[in-house]
Length: 430
Ligand SMILES: Cc1ncc(COP(=O)(O)O)c(C=O)c1O
Image (cartoon, rainbow, N blue to C red; front, side, top):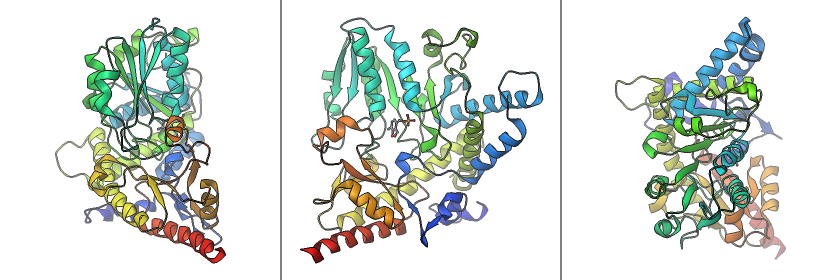
């Protein structure tokens, strides 16, 4: 990554070299991985760190022998790096688990113990079901009421004008997403958190879809709890939760007794995938290098500053990608983009684009694209409420084209060409 500083944007060719999977071809065609929202590819730094861990330090934690002592050190380091990545100030505020959904069910159940009948939980129509269903379950268990932040008139963002009506004195928890995994819309969660706090409620933020695209700063946001999934930001399959220290200490965790009360172990039930955690450290090292190469200025050379610089550089680069994609998709006859299509609102989105093509089932389009070595997703992506609100629940949902920083507009050109090919077949048949 040494030669990439001279350009203003990211040198994507150099960055792509860090990702071995991007070199794969099928039937002579390089794979275009436009499936990032379902999980991203990992850099060599991640793969090497996993291998090193498994070759040298593979052990359970807390033992007296060398591999276990090394495992403890690695575990401490990954929590510290996770805190730097999310802008937390205390590694003990970082809880790692198998995935976001498991962590959210665990913490929602713990929060549910404080709820009384008549208390209110606020959820949204835009969120992934992993930030809805756990709260619906807790509400049912505790006799709490569920209130919804609905979609705005644009059918792509949340109606934040309704916040003062939806959040009130009985609200205890507000669960909101930072970015939509279906439409790419970024929500002003700072505003939601402010209203939640003014009402005395806690804010739980699903930042899973935002994490590969934006710098996240839990301290600036004043989030009480926030979740991400490292496998969506170039690391192995894992989930990671930030929780305010006093909250994690006060809440009762469902755990085995020997786990004790100390953070973060109190919340990390059972044995972790240590090799995946080692891999996550490798991914942070990749991002740090990216941040060091592209960091704008300043004397702060800390890991936190480098990670922030990396995500800021990625965010700026992806803004250009988004504009390029919007331009290209607008040119495809008949294609309907669900989500923010106005270039003037590009700062309210990440490069995740969901479309329908009348007369073509989303799965059929995805299969056609797959036959051209282009990976996309189709369906509801568990954005269950949204897809039904858009009236797409019975028609196969959406086709999702998801870019991350290693994708290129040339890959999107290939996708557009393949879609045109599909449309061309139609006109031949007609
Ligand atoms: C926005 C969002 N939230 C939550 C999840 C669930 O994450 P996990 O797979 O880590 O449980 C996903 C996964 O697609 C997601 O995109």
